[in-house]
Length: 153
Ligand code: CUA
Image (cartoon, rainbow, N blue to C red; front, side, top):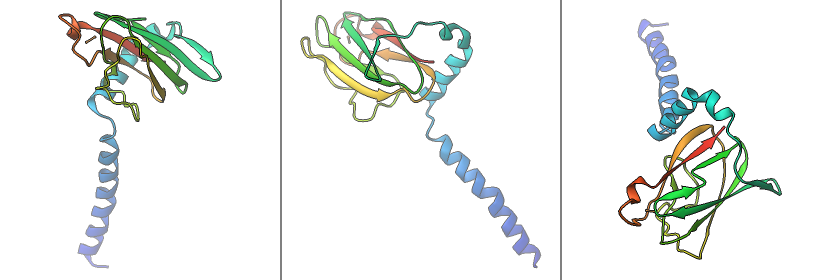
């Protein structure tokens, strides 16, 4: 076999796994990596957090109330692998809801949650981590400080 051919084959074995790995890496954006890092850092701390809401027919239902300028409860804690239903209600003025960096298929983070019209958000808590919850709709002077935590343990 010619030297060049062997070299060529070696290159393929080297390059293909590299492309594959870098392709997978793109699925984890910086928010996801940050969330995982935070969880790893606080591992013990979050293990002892009581789980939020209640199980209804295999779905963990958590009621979240949005006020100017905080969420109640301030921390939503769920177990990895659970089906989650968040029922988010605006208690005073219109608010928005986003778990920053946590992809929820079919949910538009720009949705305006109007008082009297709770928003139901269904998804699976498929990875461990800690994410910030933020309000995505301008709701007054404290809007940018309106935050919560979403913890999957
Ligand atoms: Cu609540 Cu912005």
